[in-house]
Amino acid sequence: MSVAEAQTSTDSLAGGSIPEHVAIIMDGNGRWAEHRSKPRHAGHRAGVAPVRKIVEHAARRGVSYLTLFAFSSENWRRPKSEVSKLMGLFIEALQRELNSLHRNNVKLRFIGAREQLQDRLCNRIEAAEARTAANTGLTLIVAVAYGGRWDMVNAARRLAEGVAEGKLQIGEIDEALFSEALALGGVPDPDLLIRTGGERRISNFLLWNLAYAELYFCDCLWPDFSEDVFDAALEFYARRQRRYGNTQKQLGIA
Ligand code: IPE
Ligand code: IPE
Ligand code: MG
Image (cartoon, rainbow, N blue to C red; front, side, top):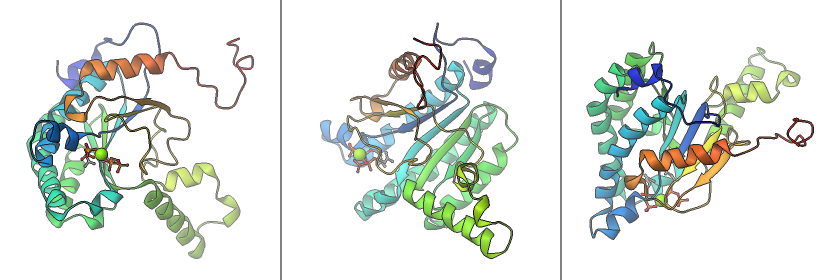
């Protein structure tokens, strides 16, 4: 089923609620390759197919926003050859997948320190965003050269500029305004975070936005990620009680 068709179907999980925004830390590519005595890059290559599958599947399940962590601000520390092959893979994958994403009504958006990326990738990103800007289906957000701390510092700078230019009063700065100044400004916070690869940490992903996300960690390595694992995460999410600091009684649950 195409993403476009999927969005009109009501093929959602029985019972529980579907998260509006799912964020995924796609981890474990290197280990996947090492287990097969292949170079790490083979793992990154093998990680493209599950992205395609999961974009379609998330739309089919009724998810509105899917944010994927593809490259962190700390990943620049990796060996030059791994970084450069990864950047090449991003360019290639974007080129290869763009037509079908567009056909499927997916709106693409990138977050991260774009100025750190090579021009060739930057140009592709801008073209992909422009081409899919009017699409009304799933919003796919890809985090490249992204770090949660970078994002918050950036937001603080933006707000400080507003104050310096006299467009904003210090007293007007509140949580809503700060959220707006972040890379995901205008996008609802992730309801569910999935991390593959067995680690139970955030690794400087959406530090502000994940404040109330439900966290799902699985041992599956990213290249092995499947619709079934995604559905298991949705089942886990559907069983959570989101209290946001309230008591069960206040929420009429107890
Ligand atoms: C995630 O897989 C992809 C990126 C961080 C770019 P890793 O490359 O971190 O894989 P492991 O964790 O070493 O197995
Ligand atoms: C997090 O994975 C970043 C991405 C998946 C893009 P890492 O493999 O870089 O995280 P750490 O280093 O294990 O915390
Ligand atoms: Mg890793």
